[in-house]
Length: 82
Image 1 (cartoon, rainbow, N blue to C red):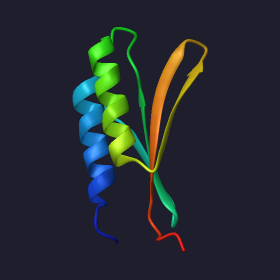
Image 2: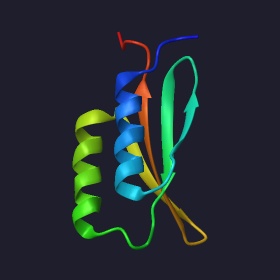
Image 3: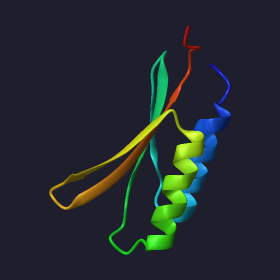
Image 4: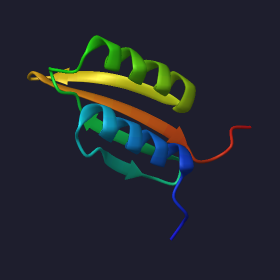
């Protein structure tokens, strides 16, 4: 079993603290993806904080809205790019 990825651990921690939910993680050999549901009550200040944090920390991130369910996701690459 491999050691936890520090960036993924930090993303999980910040999403949990900011959103008040337990994020899910999906890992492959190439990347770790962290997802969490975004509550409708999230303040604009918290939204901006998350965006700034993810810009600095994640390799990719995004947002999806399906059937009124808002989810934010972030990915960390596990292998070095050539």
